[in-house]
Image (cartoon, rainbow, N blue to C red):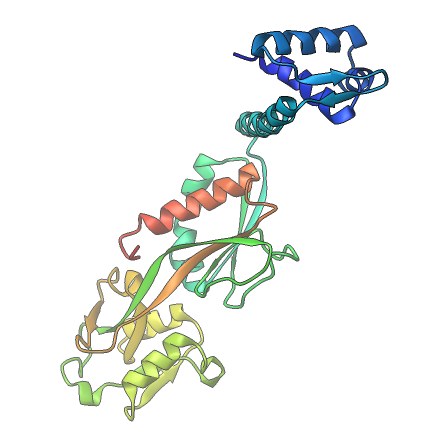
Length: 288
């Protein structure tokens, strides 16, 4: 079995082309390099280097072993990085951008728990309907409801957020679908998928009111203003609401986690990613 330290000296010789060049790179003397190289050749019982007057040239078997040793070196460096990361303090600020429905009605409820796990990470939660740029560092990590296409980023689908129709339990027309009135967004949100879904169901039936915040839809439905299209994790959890419209077309939004590749392995960013991933994937209201 070859000694890794001897292989490390061999790599230096192969890269520099001379014993003296390897000695300078490793900050040792010429004799140490020569002794390590001889020991490696003896252990493997092959000649790795042809020693010429002014240089060293790899033999055929030496070139093959060099290629394997480079792979070993890369793996050893990876082990060292993992070990260093384990001792890196989880200290820093992470900006997490999320759609308002997830920021206000899911993530905000778990900030205290996150703080108890990572007291030295300052989590800045931004509720944003629009997509922010990770490359311009407008956020470090983002949750999105459409598949990310930003170059230089890493994305993972965490789950699916289903929607349903909800009304107050005492809504006077709950069992009279022809008389339903709907709670919708205004025309500026006309291209939003859940708006199209809701208006498609409403058809010719009237829109009772328009609010441009899902939290407003929840409150209006709870007050009996009409029928709202809500994420099921929100509507099912509200004791004042009841899911209706059993035969209505189904609708859902995908939930994606995205982070810039340069930040993906930063320990404190990784902590936020893992926390959010666990929160979404283990939540009963989101399908896998």
